[in-house]
Length: 418
Image (cartoon, rainbow, N blue to C red; front, side, top):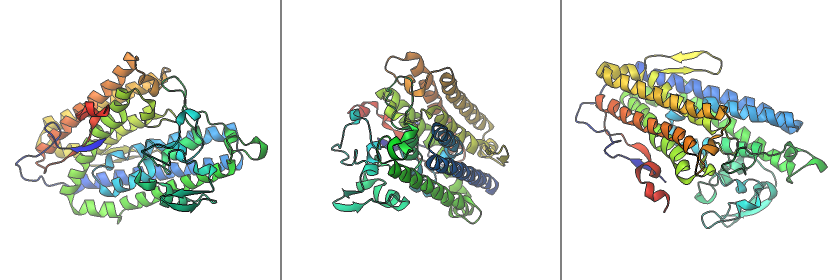
């Protein structure tokens, strides 16, 4: 369960005058966001092209190319995540593109071990791809044509249930990889390319509808990213509101850094999975790409702090930074934040290095894997430590109280098992 915390280690309230946020620092923040969302859009368009090729000529090669394009698309998008918690325009939108975990049985066929409808979600095994019509919230839904509107307006969070994720990166991921049925053993999802074949070669049934769903979800992702990139361009809502109020923008920057570091990444995405020894809590659970997504979340925090972003074409966006601003007030605190963020990035890199040595992230979550657990927990601890330093940065700037996103896994571990 996610909570917003404002407790001793994470609440930041001091009796000091508000620090005047510098317009140059805010402009760097906005420029990085615009570049990262533009890159996310470009990579999503490349994913769209690869998926069109898969659907036009299904094969092992075209499926592999689409999977590669999905993984590449995650690199810039995960670097936008530090913008989420401090900016309502992003947080209100984010569920459409990156919501997880999902009840994949809503979308397509699943293994018998998955089970069926539950008390929490009667649509957990709806299988829209196999259902040209169905009843949703007491109304008959015509799903004979799978369209972006069906996914976004009727299926996404159907009945107000967050696990009914019908759109975004993870719906696409499931359609490209299928379920990962390996538990905490090696291996990702193994959906065959023939799930998109025609005629007698079709496996899994409803290959045409599966292709229609995949295309609709991908087209939606592209349109959603087009919209968000525009919000951070000159004259866009996000850019305009932040540059008009630099003090609020500085608060948003620190809120995003602290919330992603603590409750979201260290808590919900990492420690919770360790506590439950559950690969279903793995962020990119179908593709086994979690180690990369975690790493680029860490880079996202570092980008905001350092005022630097490397675009996918190798060019750099840089300018006066939040670090520079804090250093003017207290050089020691600025250096401590810089050091702790670098340490957390190193610890997240160590997870990736372990994957490169042959052990996937979900294997590290296994109950008796002490070495794997230690590597993940080292990153969790580093993220918690950097959040405490971010709190000090809030204090030296004399900002009003900021509440960072929390997680029961960190704040109330007993509640996880209740």
